[in-house]
Image (cartoon, rainbow, N blue to C red):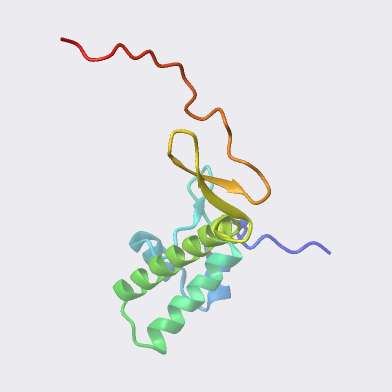
Amino acid sequence: MEQPDVDEPVFLISAAAELAGMHAQTLRQYDRLGLVVPRRRPGGGRRYSLRDVATLREIQRMSQEEGINLAGIKRILHLSREVQSLEREVERLRPRADTGSRIFTTGPTGNVVIVERGRRARRDEGRAVVLWAGPRD
């Protein structure tokens, strides 16, 4: 069975508000503040995803249980997204950081080059014919 796409904007504002246990006007305010910005339909209607609803619930929890104001919540959400982005970047770069799979060496021109273990540096790096004219008097 296929898992639902949590980012698919399927809920009208009334349904999203009900799922989040909030009033629709609260969702409009959060949209204006940039806390949860739903996608818009061509006619301008808001459509919320399951991820948006989960974020709305988290906002409500932080506000009511933790006593965090909306500006603080906005900062927390921004930093959380930034952390997720950085984690994805780390996972993307992790294979390149595996010191067991590559080595550093110098090419013919003296530049440091990274090569995969078991391979050689390219020999054509920096190859050029240079004509030396000697000192000019």
